[in-house]
Length: 353
Image (cartoon, rainbow, N blue to C red; front, side, top):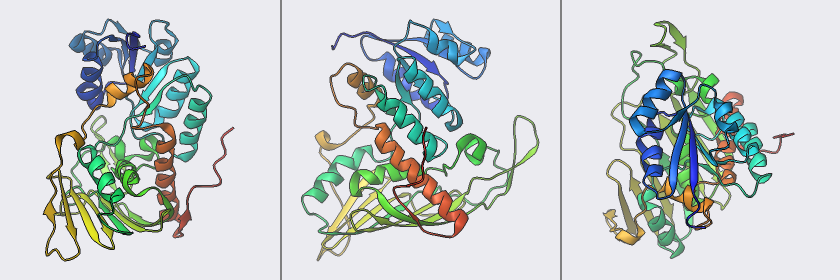
């Protein structure tokens, strides 16, 4: 199976696709990107010229219908992910879909159901890369009892900066394009699940601090309806308590990262420094933990996708089941913020026909 040729079509070619997915796929022997469909014919042609892609399409459905590809990379915004992913699977194509998985939990479950209906096809959501370097080390330290019994988790996903009304409108500011996703909440939650598992109940407070931004394409002011500040308290399935803070308006905020507190030890990951710290009972301060090269993870998203297609490895990061869990968390946060009530997980009222 290692020699199986893989012909890839691209639907959407934004920054992550151009910087990560295209170079990553083109570096793998036996993998060829044969087509691209971006937002316009002109932008599709620019990408094709830059990366030597022979075919462009103006309609993504035509790309999926072509018999010269057996895999597709979907690099569009969340509002298209469900429709495109389900269509690709129905067309018999392996799918790598950009995070965030979907607009809401119903769409995520629809995508999951479609993938389960085609078990011979690989279905991957691009994983959260924020903690690749430290994931294995944290998992091993916790398994070896470094922190003792888990007490709590604290995640800070803040972007240092004050509320800036002059920042232009982005698709992440608009529910019509991003759905219930808020900032980098989903990818931090996905990462934290690797260490402590999923939440079982969520309570959230959210605010939109900058209510309007200018749309660069029209020059008009548009309403912002995705929160730029959210605080979350959650029960974890394994009994711990978690708190999450996500903000784009916390001026001079500390570095984003995560803390894991236990009965005998603490772990702290400083994202800006890409450093893991730890301390045990009796220590006066946290100290940097050396991560051996063989335990330091790195970006290999495209290699894992291809390896899974070729039956060389089992897809780990990230399968649709895991991604659906973070979309349920995302929706629970939105429901709680809107209602003022705690929301239990998993959600029990998701109906997928």
